[in-house]
Amino acid sequence: MSPEPNASTKTPAAPRSRRKTEIGVVASDKMNKTRRIVVERLVPHPKYGKMLRRRTVCHAHDEANESHVGDTVEIMETRPLSKLKRWRIVRIVRKGAQQALAGEGQAAPQG
Image 1 (cartoon, rainbow, N blue to C red):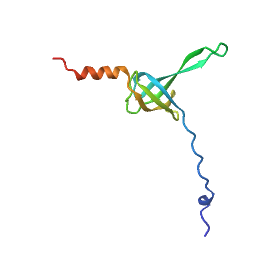
Image 2 (cartoon, rainbow, N blue to C red):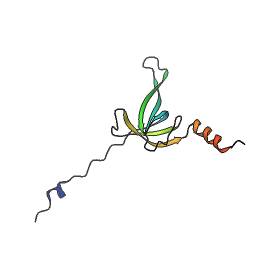
Image 3 (cartoon, helix red, strand yellow):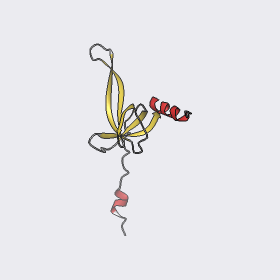
Image 4 (cartoon, rainbow, N blue to C red):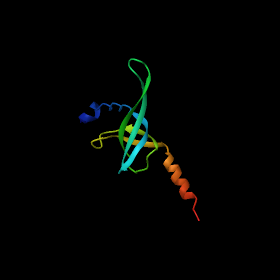
């Protein structure tokens, strides 16, 4: 009996390239399971060399609706999930100021 043709001729799959990751701030959380992330960067002016602040807006998938406006998050490239969503939230790096203020207001009951 001869071995199966696919058993010996199969080559190992090529390793998938590393996906891009970015750190940004949540600008909008009004959509369900979607966040609008602003990623800022500094680029030199082509002629004068002055550093200019530029930003990129990314729509990212947040399955559990965990992040809120002002949070700093890490996002990773993924397959297209909708017309605009090409990123997903990996983790929340730092909670925003609004979350800290909301937590303090609930902790101190007024009476």
